[in-house]
Amino acid sequence: MTAQLHVDLGAFGENLRVLRDRVAPAELMLVVKNDAYGHGVERILPRALEEGVTWVGAFDVATGRRVRRLVGEAIRVFVWMLPDPDDVAEAIDLQLDLGVGDAQLLEDAAAAARRAGTTARVHLKIDSGLRRNGIRPEEWEAVVRRARALEKRGAIRVIGVWSHIAEASDADDDDARAIFDLALTQARVAGLTPTVTHLAASSAASARAEFRYDLVRIGAFAYGVAPAGGPSALNLGLRPIGTLTATVTAVESERVHVDAGFLHGLPTALAGAADVGTPAGRRPLLAVEALQSLVGSWGGAASGDTVVLYGGGVDEPTATEWAEAIGTIGEEIVTRISPRLPRTSE
Ligand SMILES: *Cc1c(COP(=O)(O)O)cnc(C)c1O
Image 1 (cartoon, helix red, strand yellow):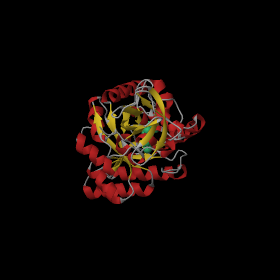
Image 2 (image 1 turned 180 degrees about the vertical axis):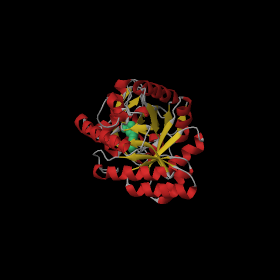
Image 3 (image 1 turned 120 degrees about the horizontal axis):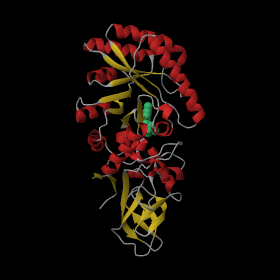
Image 4 (image 1 turned 30 degrees about the vertical axis):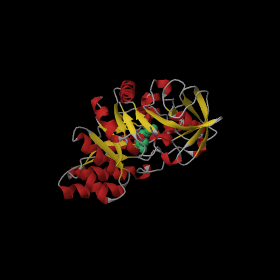
């Protein structure tokens, strides 16, 4: 046996059902960036389709290509990381929906669509305060007018208007929502008719109905992982879908060796800060080395025993709990797990 990540697709399906019920009538876009938050796009996506997911948030074109290969034309695939014109051309070729956060990208999309003899599906992004990417409010009216002109020529179609919020404080999110609402009004005044408006990710979508609009972009909660702030995934009845296990390889009097270390993606900061689940209950994680870690021993510990590094079972630490122990967010833990570590699923 070696360390491995077990993915519980049953729990994933249930999480999707809980979330879809909660956000209805808004639709759910499943975000699969970072290889479905470390759980594997190829493993996750077929189950998502069975559950009726119709939108996938792929982040970049490389992921969008993988998603298209897996699901064909059946669903809408949204990408918003388009650093150069080649990405834009390929995204249009793959019939992806493009998140467009600057005026130049709008021109690139229109030009690429004209060359390809098609119409680009565009979601215009207003910067509602995060300042990461997005059209600034003072430029917005000019950009929506330009988008309408390009639409009339058939080069683009503005399917959506969207933004991203911090979800760290309700007051900041409320300010962002006011900016978003104004931007929507201005887009409509310019003659655009977006049918898919979207603002919230896991936290705001789960906690605040007025943030749901037509569509919510859900990553962390679908995998049972909690992001920073907001309601905890566990309080909503969502279960972690990933369980990381390792095998005891040697037993000393005070500690045992297990076969997962920082080269497998365990943060070294966890040593002395986090627990793991053992057959005798929780024990402290004492050290994280390259290929192994040291765990506090228990009576009867033997080589070949399995320890749960994180998971979702009774008395097992969760990835979110590990994250809290070292001051980060759950997705930082799960997305770091090495892709070379074997994955299993059921
Ligand atoms: C990652 C991401 C999401 C999903 O966020 P979660 O908190 O994991 O649900 C949504 N929208 C955008 C733009 C993102 O980058």
